[in-house]
Length: 370
Image 1 (cartoon, one colour):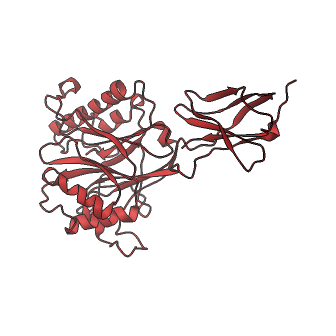
Image 2: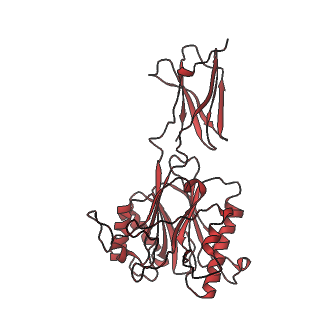
Image 3: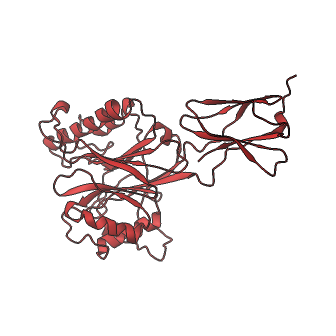
């Protein structure tokens, strides 16, 4: 005789205390080209550090770190980002490079297409710098987060525009033909693109449109300063009249976008004890861009079916690829005993069956491992 105990089942999405509910990303061109003093004692670096501590991001993508002073980034972490992980092995033009800092462990970091030939993409020359990637293990993400950043060629000449467009095409081609096939992990691209999609300097070449074309999966976002309502990011030190700095998330992150802004200290009305009005001016000619995403994997799941016949139990619940679950049992709701662990999901639903349930068991619960 089949007995169904729907009221005897507890289904919970466990592990939330350990999972990260959201992540905040900061993209910042810190104008280090030609800077001799990159130590944490310099006025410029202190201003950058105060902004970082005020914004408290989880992941930071930097552009224009001076090549000869890359070694000093470890001191930045100690002073301004204690406990953060750091990736610095990006490509360079011989003067500057990108780096990535993360509150969460960095599994690996890779420089793609560093100084590679762009002839295939319409420019007779090399990639100015590279596409830099860090694979980050975010707690509560069932798959690693892939963070890409780049710094496209600057300049307003036709040659500059062609090179910038070719670099954008090379990145897009990499995402479509190398990264995306067989990879469903969340990702985003940041950087100084040296191009304003609304005020283009290279009319007809459309590098931003190339990066955000449908095949790449990247979405165009338009963060604005909450006071001015504009998306301008350069130059706070001269004339603020263009947007060069972008955060472009994949669809999964885009649909979980919580907030975004172009950050300016000179327009703040409430200051912390360690932040000054002119810090944005002292720090860089670029303004930082900040974006917060909810954890796309930290969503509740539903029980779809439950059946028990004597010692046999059949459970079905909602899942996602690469999620891990455990099933626990209890006779009194006070003491819980593992029934099955390390149940690895490969699809949108998970079915669990066992014939090892003893008579005293009255309650079951499903635990989603962070």
